Image (tube, rainbow, N blue to C red; front, side, top):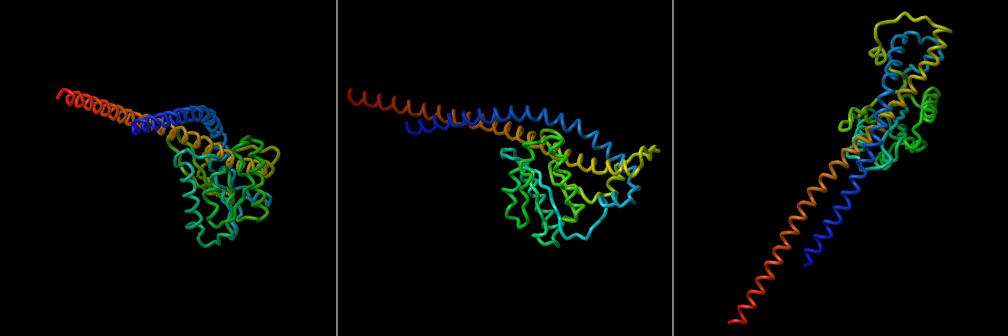
Length: 292
């Protein structure tokens, strides 16, 4: 009977867990639809900005523009790490953490760890990378709780200023790019200095633009806007990827809970049947002994 009671307790526990994972799946599915709409609407705008910059990238002689393209001797690097605030989303966070470790230990192996700063967007990144030996910047760890254009553009502006003031010689972003609910692609992008070859690869056929007021003034607004949009797109990609990964993880957890409940119910019925059979055998044996 003790075994039957234990099995009943486990069935109730698994059933409760299944209800939680099912609810989390539905919540993530709802959030995913909104996040997917946002990143789908953002991508054409970001892509068009890159095409325009690719066509105009030869006009960076002005000192006010060249500061975004200037290559510095690599002494200090900033890596923006985009993870989630919560877990239960499969390999979403661990994949980003793994890529960051590769960037630090392989790509920038010649740079002392104390000269590499990890800026976290999302709380899980710090939990998993705080002991890597790099500087940890927690100033924007709650970025996903205020994921609005104005807030993100202010954040991106601080990144531009930290590069142009020579606080850092390079700024990179590591995040999950959203493909669909089941697929997220870990992506490493160089934000600054701007990679002219990468911009040129995005450019289409050369267009004959008419500039008003002047080319320098237009590029002076267009280049920072494109970089800020790149940061915003990365955050939206990461946000959509998080909810897609969590929805899939919770769907699988719900399915596994259902399989476990089937196995537990089968074990419970078998144990109950065995107990009834044992009781019947004892009754029959006792009756036979009395008759004997």
